[in-house]
Amino acid sequence: MTTCPVCGQRGIGKVGADQYYCWDCCVEFVVRNQNLKIFNVEADGTLTLYPDLMQSTVNLEVQKG
Image (cartoon, rainbow, N blue to C red; front, side, top):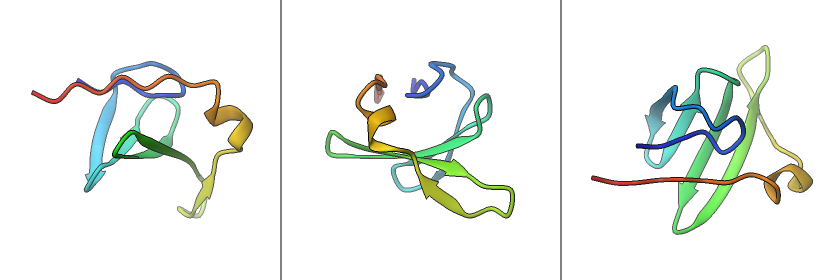
């Protein structure tokens, strides 16, 4: 089970290889080899990188099974 690193909810969908979307707070995130990148989804569909300050305060829980 994957939880959102921003809001902690479980409403996560997979949109690509190692790429997920949170239905609760509308962010996309990529998890690769313990690295995490979080993106805001803008109104026009483009992705903008979350500020680094925010990334240092989020937690990621990924369990593969």
